[in-house]
Length: 251
Image (cartoon, rainbow, N blue to C red; front, side, top):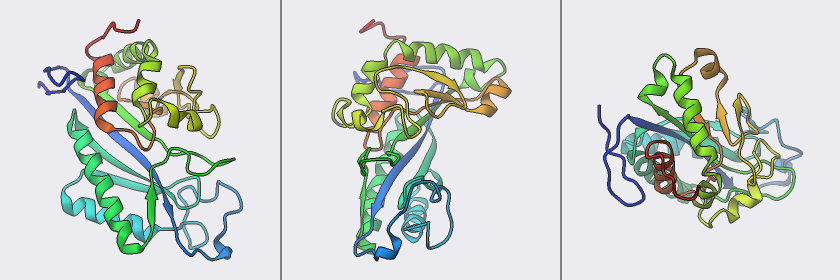
């Protein structure tokens, strides 16, 4: 199976198959919220339930249904660490298709929010202080990574990514890394923007290998650096170029 993956130069046909799944987070800003709903501290809201912790679920459910109706490959949602912060997952998609589906899902999000009289922000750090930011965690896999012994291919891809850390940081948000400067601090389940790191089940690393993948020795890896406002086409192009084209530029 050969998958067309467009590079930053807009051309190229690559194999093996490269698939993605995006976990995009957004903060829903509720207007005219009563003081009784003012948050105390972060934590209880993650995957929470109940009107005192899960703010905006009706909006999230409406968005989910709109995406399904439109044919967007949305596959899940969950409440996040900060109140009214939600995540939805899009994928599995192949190559440039990932950007198409995430882009349409964002349009539908803003359109649904109009009906509820609220705003959704994709700012990577919408609230200053001791609150989690918002990322667009990107799951990446090739056919070789999903086969027996695939962990070796995962580790090889991570090694390539480690050599292009700053290049990726520059395209992982809309302002050449300036947005992620506020988010990738090494705190709040993030890595430091200045250093590349990887680990199994480590949410504080640049690249996380899920625990089950570590046990199975095959599967996928998660790039946790892309910001919630990233251009998905730039992100997928950078990953494809580094992991598949073995670009030597910048080394």
